Image (tube, rainbow, N blue to C red; front, side):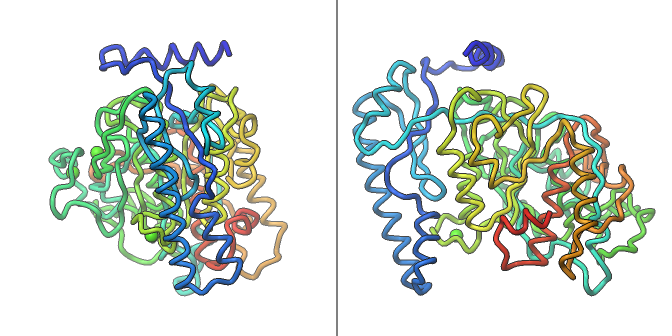
Length: 451
Ligand SMILES: [Ca+2]
Ligand SMILES: [Ca+2]
Ligand SMILES: [Ca+2]
């Protein structure tokens, strides 16, 4: 409890000059009705034809909307502000309410549970990755390079003007791009799509997000850009151009200014959940995860993400249960998305393990504290596991450093070596994309087991 209070104080500091909303708490109110994704999976299991399945899902969507309308109406009459609705991975409303009202909220008819939204910050733990991605690329004709895979990077945004992502590759292109709006033809690009859930001035969980649709990274040191480059950057040639050739085991790294990421042919989806300026906290992870299940929001989940990268850690609210949030992760995993996340940061090395056991089962939690150990162990285990002819991770390790360097936001073609950033998560996410490409029919848990 003390810790919660202390963190509350800390979280409040940067908000001093912002317009402070009334002392209300952001809460997640989960409703009784089944969310769309578990409903869809259950009906699919029952053997419904794809037409009937689609119609059944649309009917369920209407039921959820009606249920949410009714509850929202009652809540708002009672001075509870509804700020967001979720229906796919969890049937829930995000609300703001005076803290003392929380208990009565939970007793409302139709409410399953009420809980705090978990708050996240970018991971900053040290790491030295060493994996066999280059081997997985294989030969020119047989390898895996991420082609056709869709990878979400839930982070500070992404500098898609950088050559690492097929952009113009000039500082001017970055500077002249207004990050608060999408100029015609500027976004999405062939390589990068996405959304800005936070907007320019979002300052954390006590602030109101103003989404703007352009996830261009303006976050101080470019956390999301760096992470995304490791996951799926195309590589920058010595001439400062995006590399557009094949990826294979014998690729000559000396021909690159910036070596490619782990799954360089994958498509990236930059889901920006932090404000532009400072690296504050965020509680918009759920918004981004809902998007991952159904990017075009038509309640057809064929466009769900293959891999979700969360290089984030949680610092606040560990004393609370996060069962609804655990369901979100579980449902997205059951839908087929492989979720790769950090296991903690300097404030909390027990992220997930303390508060959300359900999450632990569905998310690949890459430990940052014991990073070297876990990554090497992973490689060693796969070396002993010759079970599959398509075995992706062979014992040959890439020299640490070869892939640690990644794109530096705002430089056009430049790189940065971020030894202070956790790089294991995007590496594992990239490998997960290669594994998904190799085994498109597998469940996310099977991909996780392979890794
Ligand atoms: Ca923006
Ligand atoms: Ca723009
Ligand atoms: Ca869809």
